[in-house]
Amino acid sequence: MKIVQINAVCGKGSTGRTTKELSDTLNQSGMENLIISTSDYIAENHVQVGSVLENKLHALFARIFGYDSHYSYFSTRKIIKTLKKFKPDVVHLRNLHGNYVNLPKLLKFLSKNDIATVITLHDCWFFTGKCTHYTTQKCYNWKDNCGSCPQLKKDIPSLVFDKTSKQLQEKKKGFLSIPRLAVVGVSDWITNEAKKSFLKDAKIIRRIYNWIDLDVFYPREVEKNDKFTVLCIGAGWNENSEKLKDLIKLSKVLPADMEILLAGSVSTNEPLPSNVKKVGYVSSTDELAKLYSKVDAYVHLSREDTFGKVIAEALACGTPAIVYNSTACPELIGKGCGYVVEVGGVNAIVDRLKEIKSNGKGGYLNNCVKFVKDNFDKQNLINETVNLYNDLLNR
Image (tube, rainbow, N blue to C red; front, side):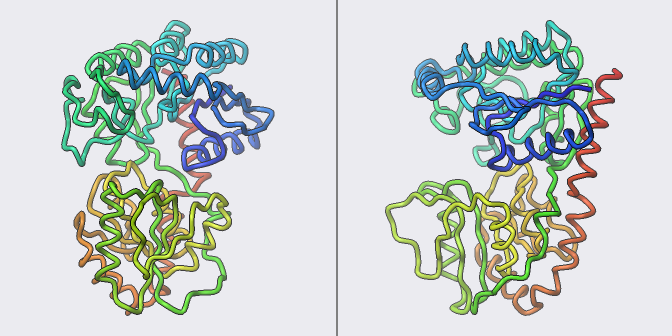
């Protein structure tokens, strides 16, 4: 069996690491595979597509004309040329909304050549007119037909034209024209959402959780802080984001004997409170595991997640987590692994932090590690993925 994965990035970020981890495991089992991405990652089985100029032109045209996946002619031509040469049995599509794919052309090729195709829902883009998430906007037009998009200038912005209705119809026609199509949801929540969309007509729709590499993420022996320390991680903390607003609110009611470590890029003109300390973007998984192990609790302030890999990574390192009762986040809190609070409930977060401090981190550690091992073990979930490939090929 020959596999090709297509993803915006390779080896970095949650989807990039997942893509590379699957490829590495397939290599070890002797299975031929390729990764196609825009990353400058160097490996024998990696093909880089796109260019800085084409990427910027794609983004510009999307903003002007409203189509977010209709450009990148040269990049898509290289993708199709690579597929023709490699002749894969299965093409696995991950994140395509990175200004590097002409989606109609790619789907037409996959359909015409009857190539078994798997899509993994790392977000909601595959079954919407353009948005990656929609729950905070409470917009469910994608169930029937998008249009009058409340997030036209957000996510993947269009400055003038609303082409979400046409794009949704194109996605429906393109994906459902593929004879053998499988849909993977990385949580029960996103899988159930997909079943409400046109993707319900795929040959297979199945939940396979994101996996955690337990050879990397495990409790480390590290020096602890004197204060009870809370970790918050996010991709882009800016002054307009609800999660940064919640973080500021949390810092104001946090007890004096607690502090917050903030990981990720921070973009705000306002100085952060004195009990919030920036640690920047942590790219090394080894350093990330040490950071999870160092803190006493992890607090996840995101309101929209199809999985929330950082939550599971924290648990794998023995650190209890507190999440909002929103989208897929509650699925990741097993018994004795932390707490679920209502969205925006910073006072409830403080109450739970006090409870964790009273009980001690050690009272949660074994439950956290076991829950991740039982549900998110890398080898088990990669085996499920390969089984899915075989099931799809046998259809």
